Image (tube, rainbow, N blue to C red):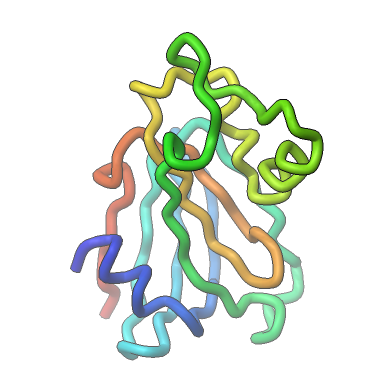
Length: 137
């Protein structure tokens, strides 16, 4: 299964656990729609976590998102820059797109996120190959 297929099945997923080590985030998810437990390994040095300590279902129910940065962010001289419009800039911040500001557009292509009512975690990744999917059990 590739990441784009997984995203389409991720609507009612549950984030069981996560940790970061040696430039990789490891996330254990239950993908309800296909009744599969997986480990996602995301290779990234640029990330944001806002995951509640409460592990009950309402706080950890989530879905996956993958955004192609060049389709959303402004680029000047090959570098991602914030929108000059304040409203758009604040929207980019809420979507964690600010992780890409100052990065070369040819170096980083995607923002991968785990979302609920808000972004639980976001990762700036070079390619979709930086996201590894491993089925468990």
